[in-house]
Length: 84
Length: 147
Image 1 (tube, one colour):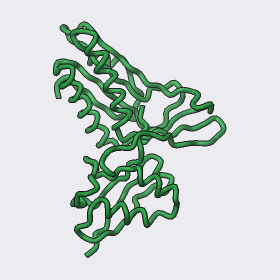
Image 2: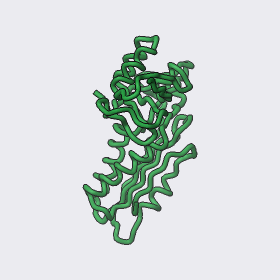
Image 3: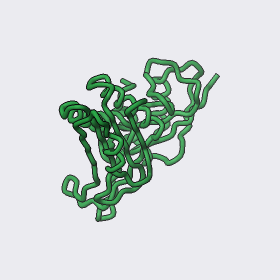
Image 4: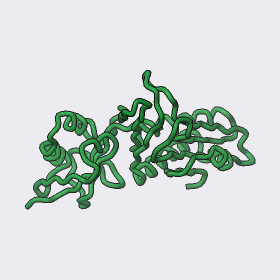
């Protein structure tokens, strides 16, 4: 069985789409497996490089790569930050 | 949490509100930091900056940073950390941090801690807009949570 996740871009990731991007992975997949599947959907080398240094998160916590994906299907991708 | 104010807003930031919050009869010291949009970066003339912010996570991180400052320099400190989102013209304030304490050392250290931690940990992104019409997202600090 597959699970579908909606990943909302922030910061420099908005170059690759303003709206949420959809990624599908097998049920029980880890965050790292979602990252791999997400990278495979990106057409651009620069986008894949940016993903490699970006965090995946829910609306209230960063996700650890080795952990199972959360119940929420709404995720965000957070590139390196530059506030201030 | 007592003595802590965190905020993400699209409205203009005011230093007076931060200093009013960072005030108490026993506090003999107050520090204020105002970060503003400057007109030049790496040789390019800047006309403004757009700030993209994940509001919910930023509020949570700001509260964590302030709680850490309380642990390190005392729970009696008053701490203020606010950040603007949206488009800001040159000269407008993007961030205000303030701290007050009985003696100056704690407020100096805490105020700097708020600013430095915010820059490294808060999910906020800066896109500079140049006078020549170009725009560029700024490089920054990778967040923990993967790797």
